[in-house]
Length: 222
Ligand code: B12
Image (cartoon, helix red, strand yellow):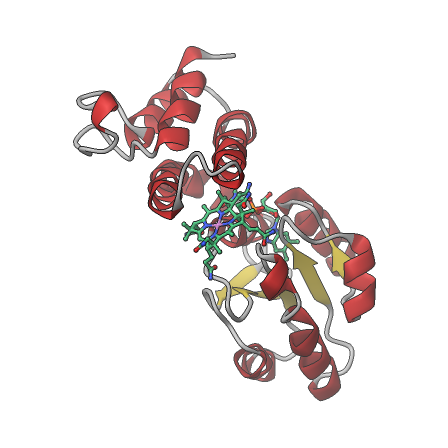
């Protein structure tokens, strides 16, 4: 793999945000995710490769180490920050694309859940696919989703959850939105989900990643 991508993966894994960041001490003075993502783009590495070959695997390694109690929440947070610094460089590439005419996509991370990296990525990719995005942020309850649908008739809704405890909160959101606005399509995703769970809570579609979400929406708009 490209050596800048390898370094970028390490920077995200260890939470090195940028060159000036004092954390982690053993990487003092080295380039961080901010500089390395820019360098990768400048040398012609494709934005999707930066994402799938460096950033996402790095976050997987972070999750693995957290599961094994080798790192704790503060380190995970620094990795998330480093991931964010890299993603800021990729954003313009994913957001460009067609004029936003396909429809409106409302997305949020569900009640109790503060993980937003995956949600932001899905929003970015869907926006690049030609949709107008309404991002409700994190820790979003059923009333807020419902109001957003009321304000944007015909919009499609995307729910994200990264915790086994918060994925359960999706059901109430799906129920409320579908009861109040029959026919609204609801898309769900997040690492602990699968299609069986999607069926159980009455949502319309599950995608394991942002590409799946973009493809499904493309079919809906066709
Ligand atoms: C970064 C991180 C954090 C950061 C989040 C920062 C942020 N701004 O998001 C911080 C430090 C805050 C955090 C906190 C916690 N975390 Co955390 N976190 C992670 C970590 C390492 C990475 C998540 C991530 O960003 N992945 C990268 C993105 C790109 O992937 P993704 O989110 O899965 O999204 C993709 C797909 O899932 C999908 N997708 C996502 N959303 C949607 C939506 C739709 C509609 C669709 C179609 C697709 C889709 O597409 C995305 C792109 O491909 C994961 C480990 C892991 N490997 O997932 C743990 C992890 C999710 N966290 C975990 C835990 C336990 C916690 C805490 C409870 C820890 C604690 N004791 O406090 C808290 C909970 C806080 C809360 N209330 O939400 C556990 C969850 C265990 C479980 N099964 O429930 C994990 C799995 C770590 C582990 N292995 O134990 N965390």
